[in-house]
Image 1: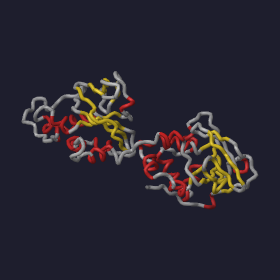
Image 2: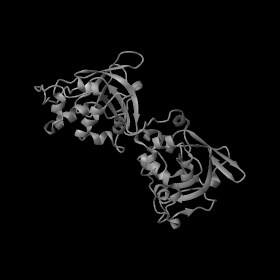
Image 3: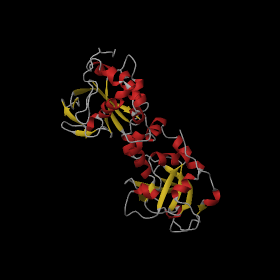
Image 4: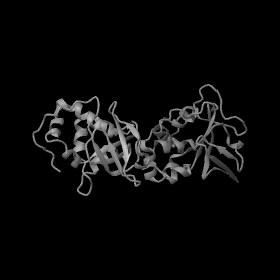
Length: 348
């Protein structure tokens, strides 16, 4: 796992004496929580998680206009993250897991500053995620939820950090974890090119011939939903059209066709109902859904008709649904191959 590790500067980490009532301070040179965490080697995986969730500061993370200027962060150590199921953690750090990851990280942050000495047995702390986090004390052990505080009271100019020995995962994330599949959308399409799966070799060739391959292989951008025509769908195009579209001069026209099959949001089969319309990457072109049966068998109509024949193929940056026809743009597009008829050269 790639980790973002800041240089550890012990002199800049100020441990509190345990008698104060406020965690924050405007002491000159004191770091923010984000800076403090980034400078602590033992929290580098926590930093990686914050980066994956696009969090650059705790205040930004809070997303509450009336939030106080001070926070308490229960930061899991690297060893704590090592205890998390590898598949779950990998998916949480992928784009498709960003919403669940953000929810999980918010479960570690309280919108007030609390030193260890001020935490009381059976106290319930309201986290930014919205759920309560119960404090428990037994002899010399101080716990929040199922995690033990192993290092307390690292002071920052906007609150306090306590290191904990376990990652706190909300029940909702455990019950409904994100689904990542085995790679990006592009990698997933390539992996399907075997005799036991619906072949997407022609679609992969089309992506490679245009700049769209960057989007469907990206791990940095927004989540995407791809309606992927099978090889048989491409084979059903008018004779000679495919060969014509692959010519460099027709790259833009081919790209427009491909963009029509990509929706810039995450859509599972259960998310779509009859009559729904969604924008695609192709400007001024939408997909309209008609649901044929209560089992979720879709019929997509837009200038042509296609049926989803395999739904919900998960990927790290979105989801793929295989369809049985190639859709052509209804507006703002001219077919450069309309008069071509040189024989169909797609073989499936």
